[in-house]
Length: 429
Ligand code: NAD
Image (tube, rainbow, N blue to C red; front, side):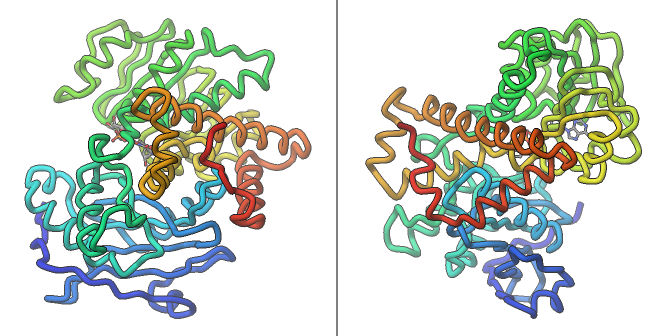
């Protein structure tokens, strides 16, 4: 792929109010957007990305910076709206935002110095936009967040500016959310909560299919296997594997990061799907289906073949809302919505931000184990399990609503209640 020249400098052009609709052909909702910023190269005016600040009711907006070749303002805005719901539902003192830079992540992975220049220019451009706090997302990582943090420190004249980046390396005061599997921890907690709510469902010996054996999928598989569930299916971009008696977890881990990934798996299987047939794995019988790879995994095209009892949405938007409704009505399938169940990562970002601002809070987080992992797992469990309980209660009270409707009602209620209700939401007693 041809990659654009790395800009010497980037600027942002901020668009607010009615002009957003005309300029970007976006349809605002009752919650936002507050503003859309176009990131451009002042040398030639070319658009190099977008920032969407959707809603600021709960606090400054926080959401990841995505690096992708085809990122659009519509995608960034859609993701920012989802962050408004995710952050509000998790009772974080943060609004919803997101940003996207246009670029080929593979090229930048191979040319780290170019990536540093791009991210540094982007951080300088972001500095006037105090309403947005960047974190990591697809194509960006902890080192990029550290660079943004350092540029902000230089421009601010001092560290602890409260502007991010967050999701920095642990030796720089960050929380390694992927290494600790914190998003997976939230998804696992949801499974435990469903077990408590459904007397006929036991995690021990439940069968599980994981689409996307990456950061989230792999950590989730381990946690479920440790609870004696059977991982009967797993996939990555190379292969999808199925065995009704369970896959060999050690073998999955051995090949995961090798060239060819799961296609190199040498353990027991009854079926292997490759190339265009990967999604057939979603159709095997299982108790829990965890799509943890990409959007639109379950669509109108394969909904009728889905046999899971519970779908835990590790990925963002893996099941279209109309498909969720169909699955619930026709097959009684429970879908625990992405912005409820995959909040572990952003909860860690919120904690890191507060640790930067308050040394006493940092001490509290680190007190139990010196690194903060125990604190984070307890906090993520507390937040996600309370939200899954809340949604189950809403469905019990009105079984005609969908699981997504119940999740939306919860998030909207938190937004309406406003920031006063979320004081100390990141503090464990
Ligand atoms: P990752 O890149 O580590 O893993 C993604 C995995 O999906 C890889 O193994 C990849 O090979 C696989 N994959 C890609 N396309 C596939 C396909 N068509 N079929 C099967 N497998 C496929 O990413 P991640 O950090 O684990 O994130 C996974 C998803 O969860 C993404 O949608 C991300 O936006 C979402 N998410 C992640 C976090 C987090 O904390 N990492 C938080 C919230 C949401």
